[in-house]
Image 1 (spheres, rainbow, N blue to C red):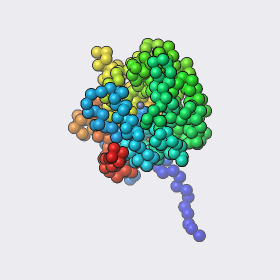
Image 2: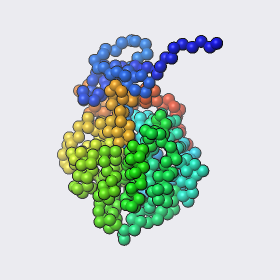
Image 3: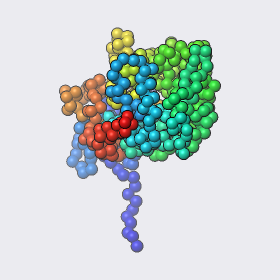
Image 4: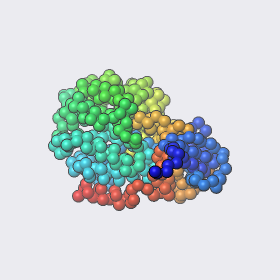
Length: 467
Ligand SMILES: [Zn+2]
């Protein structure tokens, strides 16, 4: 007869952070952090380090997990390629379509796993994947019509981060000058489900549970690609599906002036007005980019507490423009950040990009504090992806920790008083030393514990796609 002891219960872990950024009290020294299972159990500042066995020392500044609220994993293959030569968003899009044309579930899994592993190394513990590459060449569904989405969920598990799969409705190739929707063509055929009802039927087959979960680490979300790609009459079923599953709802909004002009011609309204009239705004909704907004668009977003997700490195790379981040925040919109096209994967760059672009646009410094920007990259980002109770080092929250070394060339000289400012305004992804997701180590001493050689994985996956 086997001898069994008492059930040890969920694993308990303990860390001692030299410095930690805590909600409401800023950067604190000597913070003892305990977790039971995947959640924090206790957080106490001012506890001297002790040699107690099992306590992991975290030198540097420890932050909660970072949320990358807007990702298209396959765009990682385009880094360097689309930066060569002149062009606009629209010429970039042609290069992006060429990569989209080549991906299959296996190659997409390998590319996304490597791209997500790069994110883990950068301190990302949760990604919002704005997923529209659904079907095979010519738009022919795979045997499992959700094979590509499931590949993203698996990739996140294998890279050790959480995911919100923002399954994206993408039905039209654009709005023509007369206000008609243009049919999908070429590689875009792979994005389409015919109409929003068929989109909802396919997404339903992902079988989220009553809480919208697709697994312990994965949550279902919905997205309207943009008013260019989803005719106004097709927006309703996407919203209805999101409401039915308490799922977050995301959309690209006014990234380009051309979108606004086409939308005005088609509907006599701005993209924000079209989405507002359809009922797409609200606290569970996130508008990505929000670049070219009118004052009344800002009121619509802020008044409805719609989150605005900025992706400053991509918006600069694609020559999109600078969105009204300060006005949106003042009007009531929470802000989050995303690496979008992965021109770089560095959420510190995205967070400070919000402030630095506002400075360039207005001639005024200090529109957002380091605390505001860190919140965008942590708690607000998690909230906009549907993960309430994450992104803060407090008892009960998901036990995600990101420790940034302060002895690197970029951060040497940082003090307790300004450690958060130093990290937000000068750290890079390369300064992240350790990452814990749900109480489990994913990155230790700058090394990914689940993906052996992340650069090699990226090189192989990108070579496999580009040929
Ligand atoms: Zn995007």
